[in-house]
Length: 281
Image (tube, rainbow, N blue to C red; front, side, top):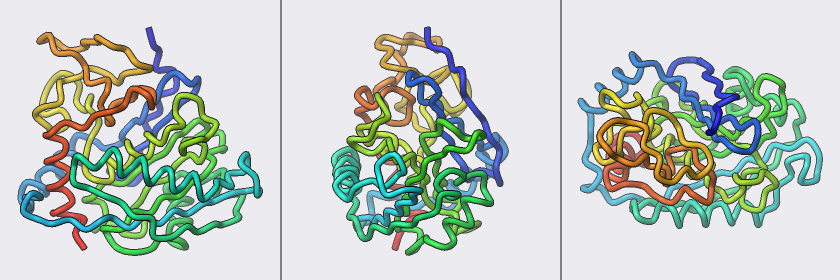
């Protein structure tokens, strides 16, 4: 039995923030703070303005990697260019089935111990992003930090949703724990899948367990309902009535990196439509 001992649901300025917390190396809680009302509003807006992504030819997303560090060594967040290139390779490998690709545009490095340790809550992160963010809605900005502050220790990362860009364009992007990059020292979560997961949110996906066993769930028809997030690699888990196995191998669940391997066709369609609607150049 896996215990969600450190699941933190932090409400911060509406629907923008998605957090991932790991306290003991066995779980990847990523508690979305979107309320049911905000979810409804987002989906109503998406339904009213939806552009079918299959009719649009997508250009690669430019990726701006902002390395925020406190000392010029790996324990201080000074990740190597090689790790960043490897992370982009992981993104391209996992998103190729969706027809989505990424190209590394620039790596910036900023020495700031306070931002490295306290890149949350919203106001601190927004100040940091405002000074660094580049590009428009189709440009992915990733900020690697340490999340060392007591209120966020153990966080793996958080992202914004596509619909949030209009409300706060400078806040758009992903904050990521530096040790979750490929070759990092966060055991079980160091194959680059945390950024794959967060990019899924950045492209409009919810968690596979959104809404539990009832209702529209994650608004994707072919992801089985799931009562709660997975932990580890719980093969054969079935948490909702109906005899369906939980999608523990899905990138939008909480399994170990090694067990996250799949997007469904429905998720791929949703991402394409979200990109066409909100993240076109």
